[in-house]
Length: 103
View (spheres, rainbow, N blue to C red):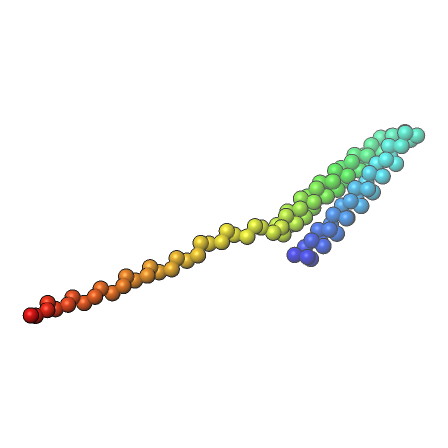
């Protein structure tokens, strides 16, 4: 379980770095001092697509990691079962019928 969580953490960190990279790349391409020509439009669209993919990957990894972490929470202990009832106490033995007394 620990290995799975560490792998998810690594994937999340990679997705975050990818988001940062693509966001900065788009910011450079969209610099107000630059003019956007026909050639750069395809780069803008590709950068936006890659940014969207990185965000979707991060969201999927976050959802998976959250599900794994929630599965590790403790559940409440099951209600204690009622104690097993003791077997009924047998009735005391009946006295043997006595023979009639002779006079």
